[in-house]
Image 1 (spheres, rainbow, N blue to C red):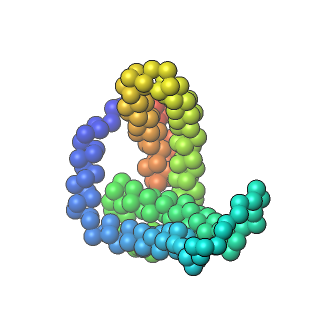
Image 2 (image 1 turned 90 degrees about the horizontal axis):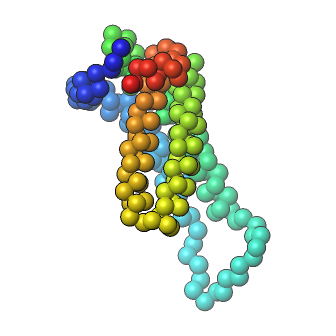
Image 3 (image 1 turned 30 degrees about the vertical axis):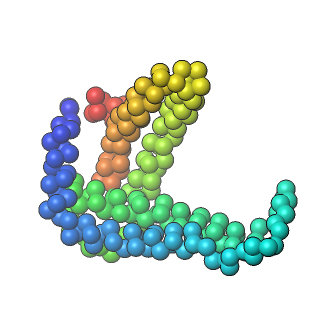
Length: 192
């Protein structure tokens, strides 16, 4: 069975436009929460340094309160993002793929087994693409040093290859959102 790619893309954009208000209600809470957390994590809470005070650099400095705050708050914001992204994504996938399912915004943000499955699918895709990034990046880096014009031509090819690989493997994500198990062979067969 072949997937009608362009018809699917067109249908998903039409669905988004027809359900844009639901999308805003679904996306607004996590976007606002994450924006606040990342702003707090990245903000500079310290006073400006004195201009005439010399600074000495030490090999092993004890982290100050600001460094600890940034590290802990950045890690906390990242962990919340890791939790919120599957919640939001599963809800949006399910609203598109199972259109007669009745659910509230609150019920969309309750963690269930399908969210674990979705998160695991995201991790699988990342682990599969990691060697492509590493090998392709190293190969391109060596080519930049040896043959810059060839490397400039190969970089877009590598980027397109990564997008194609991600596009093929990303079929795991909607399958996980609707509680459907797919093997790698099934994903590759459907995306030929």
